[in-house]
Amino acid sequence: LAQIDAVVSDLGVDAVKIGMIGSARTALAVAEKLRELPGVPVIFDPVMVATSGATLADDATIGAFRQLMDR
Picture 1 (cartoon, rainbow, N blue to C red):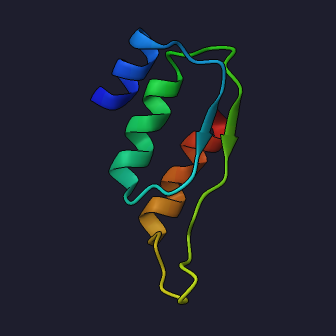
Picture 2 (picture 1 turned 90 degrees about the horizontal axis):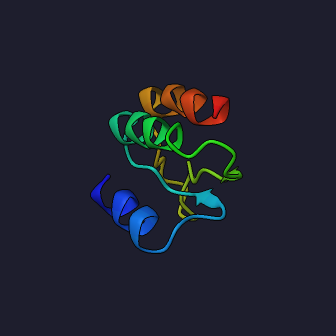
């Protein structure tokens, strides 16, 4: 969250791309931060399975992705 705040205050944001998010807690926190950026386009391209086939997003995290998609 501190990284998001630093980028927004230092550089500004024209668009956001979201890829790998490792937990439901992080997904919900990012969704909350995005609410502070109305009108900024968001690309949500989640990484849920590694090339090796390992699962990277558990059910709780996938459920939290809904908050990001709502944004």
